[in-house]
Amino acid sequence: LAKTTQPISMDSYEGQEVNITCSHNNIATNDYITWYQQFPSQGPRFIIQGYKTKVTNEVASLFIPADRKSSTLSLPRVSLSDTAVYYCLVGDPNTGKLIFGQGTTLQVKP
Amino acid sequence: GAVVSQHPSWVICKSGTSVKIECRSLDFQATTMFWYRQFPKQSLMLMATSNEGSKATYEQGVEKDKFLINHASLTLSTLTVTSAHPEDSSFYICSARIGLWNTEAFFGQGTRLTVV
Image (cartoon, rainbow over all chains, first blue to last red; front, side, top):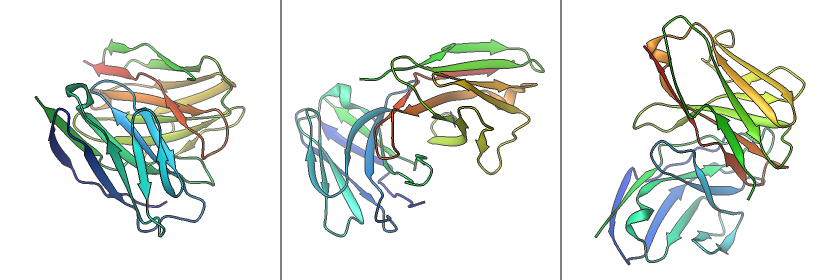
C-alpha cells in the first residue's frame, strides 16, 4: 500500500485559501487519491477524489501533478467550520482498503 | 449521497461484558465493509474487512476472537467486542462502498465505546 505523508497541522484565517499537500511517492498505477474531512467524534466525510491533473467540486479542488507522487487539496475561502482533520488516502485497487495516515489538523482562526 | 448508519452512537459497558455494534448501509448494498478504531488524537486504524457471506479479514495485530465480525447480509455488518476491558474503550467506525475500489467510501457516524 502506498504510504501518504502530510503536514501534521496548519493554521489559517477565515476567508483565506488553504492548500494542503500530501506526498505519496509509492503510488501505484491504478491508485486513486481521495481526501476526507473529519470532525471530532464523527466519521470521516468524503471531500474529493482524483486520478490525475485537476478535479474540482463544490467544496474543493484537487491538484495532481503528472508524476502523481503528490497531491494538493485546495480549500477556497475557508471558514471557522472548516476546522477539522484532513486525510489524504491512496486506495488499494486489489482490496479496496483505505489506510489512513496521520492527517492534517487545520485550525481556522477568526 | 449514500448513508451508512451505526448503532449505537455511544455505549458504556462493564468490564468483562460483550458489546455489539451494528453498521448498516441504508440505501445501497455493500458486499464489503470496513471496521476502524480511533483513539483520542490519533488517526483511524483499520481493524478488519467484513465480507458478506464469508469470514472477515483481520489486520495484523487485531485479535479475531476478541473482535467478532459478522456480515450476514448486503446491508448489515456487526462488530462484537467480547469480554471488553477498559483498554478497548475507543471510537469505532465502519465504512462501505457502493461499488468498486475507486469509488467513494461512506463512513458511519461512529460508536463511542467506554468500558468501565
